[in-house]
Image (cartoon, rainbow, N blue to C red):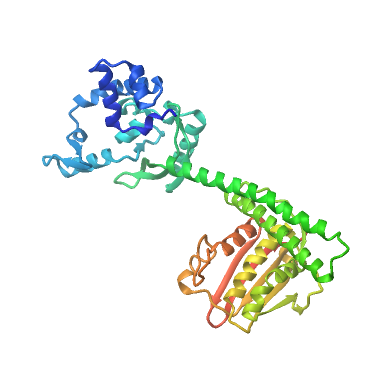
Length: 425
């Protein structure tokens, strides 16, 4: 398989060019040896002659050399020159743009990635090397920094010289001695390798979800066929129904994992309907019966100050999302509850705000060392198999359904999880 030009070190590229120009070897032979296309070799050729003049320049950044991965300094350099030398040797592009968004000062890495000498970049903006859409996106961030004096972090995916890059950029205002903004400073980090790994992970997860559905469909359909047999007794029928329900539940979990991924990416299409939380709560409680028995915990339901299971409680949402949200939060509360105690689910109408409050209370306290990160991804404590994803996914679901999530916790009062969701339309 042909390799990309960026797969080779600068020294390897130089040796390849030397074999042609000094040793007079044929280009096709060299390209075969390196496993590259001839156009890549010609790109190296062009780059050599574009930047070859730098070898004859007497600038401070050339008064250094790299030997055995160590930067060797000329001791005659002053402190400012050393700072310039270090910045110029960094692999991350660092640049300063003026008030018009034009390149002013930059290190060598900027020139390397854009394939344009620093002298030619001065007075230009990103449109000199990037497509108009990406260049305008970067320029819009510069304008925001100049207008508001804020520090921004953003990602851009430019295509430069037919190569796709992914950069994470931090851009900040540049002030003069009188505290006036005179430009912006941008520091870029090439995250192309990380993005490749992320895409691979996403592809594997998507394929896994797809492959899981086929055997699950068989698990769900076979009990239905077997239930048609008249020779089955009551217990056998009940067991088959449990198998079928478990299959449906697992299928919903597979679908939910895909939905959560879309929520994180901001691409989930929320389709709200009226959902009866009491019915969802009953289903969740049955599914968590083993946890409830293990902790010997009682689940109380209070609807508008009345202990009842009969009154419906409608919110605007999606049933599968509400089921996953309640399952995660109620399971978390049961696990955190002291033994032989109770978990109370309180449902309250707030007609003046056109919303509904779902509150889940247990008498356990959230450990102090994770309170600041509670609800964030991978925040967990005291569970051998805990991932911290339960509360995080519940919070993500609540926000997707245009709701709010809050909580309070203390040793004296226990922990209360509050979910505010829109009322029915």
